[in-house]
Image (cartoon, rainbow, N blue to C red; front, side, top):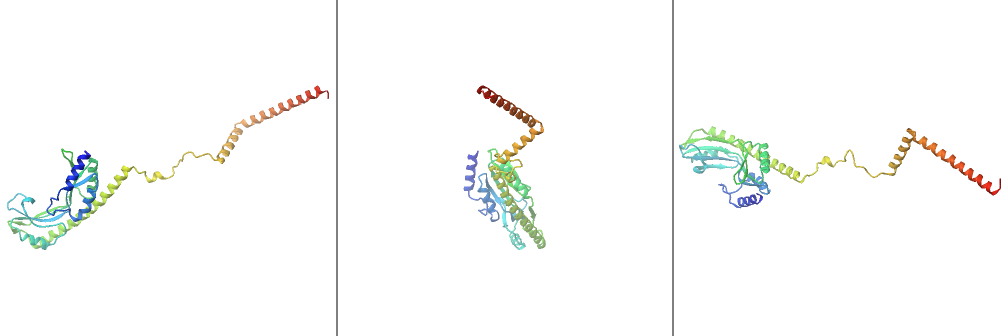
Length: 275
């Protein structure tokens, strides 16, 4: 499985960027670079977030980006003049959309996908999820819900006034600001999660474990310890009467030895005729 994942990653990163821009958006270059530098992840598609004005065919049931004209697109904040200039080119049904940050990440293991999903949810991307394909591809999609979609013209005719376009411009820009804040939060949380995971893999000891234990192992016995043990031994002997018995025994031995010496002396003098 690891070999297959590595092949998928090499193939994906070698392919040309298929987006209209043809490169990774500047506001998420650091995020994409971080993920692609890790052995357990690689990005398959991404967008930092954008405000777009699309002109669809009149009478169509919905706006399909592949079958429409792009009147305006920006990955940064825009002005009402930008939108009005785009609306002047409309000949169909123009729709203003704000699309927040989206990121698709292929993961080596299910545990990696769960980590990515947790980071996304904690960073405010509540619409995130993960899928497992038949071939074993595990994809985490980082998505948010703070989008915007408003119809502005029909058959080339503007349906709203300039004041409402100004209001929509402010709304779209506020969403862009919040979008950038979430991207920053996502990057910080991702870095922290990856560091924590690395430490867990290394099984580094808890700093509290490095403190001196409350019950240290037995150390080598010192001379003072030996003297203390000897003193405690004789005190215990005295307390239970053992020392008294030892004293009596020693006194009895001295008396016996004294009698033996006297007998030996008596025999010596008797045998020598001195008595």
